[in-house]
Amino acid sequence: MQSPNQVDAQITRLIREEWGRLLAVLTGFGGDLSLAEDCLHDAVVAALQTWPETGLPSAPDAWLITTARRKAIDRLRRVQTNASKAEALAFWQWQNAPEAEELQTLPDRRLELIFTCCHPALDEKSRVALTLRAVGGLTTSEIAAAFLDKQEAMAARLTRAKKKIASAGIRFRLPDAEDLPGRIDGVLQVIYLIFNEGHRGSSEQLTRTDLAEEAIRLVRILSTCLPDHLETKGLLALMLLTDARRLARKGPSGAFIPLEEQKRSRWDRGKIREGKRLVETVLKAGPPGAYALQAAISALHAEAPDFARTDWTQIVALYDLLWKLQPNPVVLLNCAVAQSYATDPSTALEQLEATGAGQHLQAYQPYHACRADLLARQGRWKEATVAYDRAIVLTEAPEEVAFLQARREAAANSGQPSS
Amino acid sequence: MQFMLLIYSQEGSGPQPGTDEFGPFIGAYMGFTQKMKDEGKLISGEGLQPVATATTLSIRNGKTQTMDGPFAETKEQLGGYYLLELADLDEALKCAAEIPTANYGRIEVRPVAVYD
Image (cartoon, rainbow over all chains, first blue to last red; front, side, top):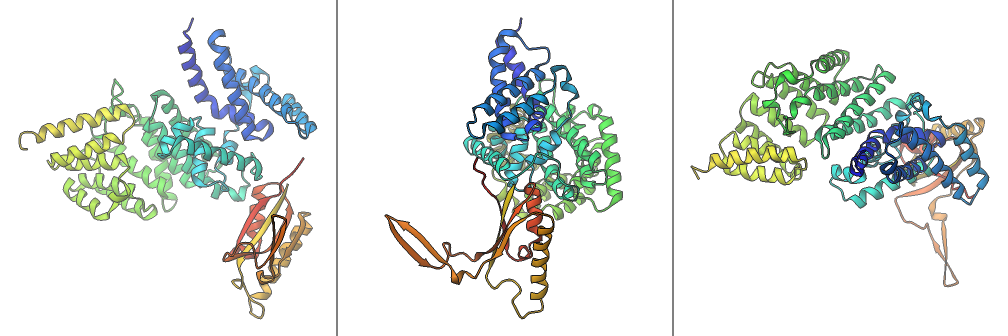
């Protein structure tokens, strides 16, 4: 017999993993995202009340769908106006309801859900937030943390977005063929963000890992739908090449290991091969987009026999191209890291500071971590310690805090005798 | 569902009568209106007289007040509208993109409220 806490944890994980698929199935019944979310939420509440006593049902997702459907019908019956319409909808839902054992055969409607969440009539931040919530199953507070927003503000944003979808005529469907290329760019952006959320890890490792796999799966589906869309391939390549290093990024106790110290034998060669093949295809097909360039950079890391023998000069050149497509201070920061190995840390830091990127990156943890590293490698221990402190304050993941603490201590100790 | 496409522009910013551009501009409007009619989407659509002709009315404490001019003194003014019967917002946005004024003004797309 499992303890109530174990059941709670299992339920929480199940709901996180299955949320997008369940929500898409439920939205597909009546086309109403808000109703689907409300009734799925009702079903989850019921599960949290029932399962700790009864144990998990044999098919928890089927249980949730069936319960959510009943809750939807209850909700529709409570709507006083236009009762006949509500009844008709309820009947329709009942008629189309899957039998529990058939649930696995239901079509995956997550793509429709993504296009709905990424509709251009929503502002960009709401698209990202809603996709993370509806498809990724992230909680409002996790999304708020990703945006450095207040939870109430994020909750209000999500509510506004769902109201607009419900009343502005945004349908639960794939876009028309002629709109697809334009709509896909926004979707790629959202998927990449989900992927990064999976890798960055602001909470429990296991679920974050699934999120990265989910992002890869989603971009594969997109790539099948749009075989000629190069940036979709570019993003798939980038994700595969990044994900190939996932195992090597974590030590046995979950400690964060930087690229420099990773065991390259732990990199996933299968993913690297597929990623590199995609990069080559995309680079041959035309001028590379931003994802393809980042994938090319990642491929150079992947094929280097060790950290020192990485083709840093080529990486700096690729970052320069990327900067032309994406004049974003984060690109300058990454370029500075590559530059510090292509030339030296002091040149890299001078160049970074000359760009003025720092003033836009004060709240950005990697900026301070990077500066700290560049300073430490020049023996500027005191300044490095201060920069590490800034980085640590901005870091959420405990394993990254531990990593930065260790580096900070090393810098502080090195500075001790001479200061 | 019904969509109201509200056509906003700065008065005098589009092709003016007497210029070479005016004929094709009016032609494009007529073409769009005809297309919406042919496809069974047009409920109504009209252009409005300039804002100089506008009168704004309000009643406060039982007292009717009238004011010369539009409610909001903004650069871009409501100059006309289409009321269309369409499948969804995607279709409404495509129709909005065909309205000639979209090229220098703005088209606000608003679903019509349904009370039942």
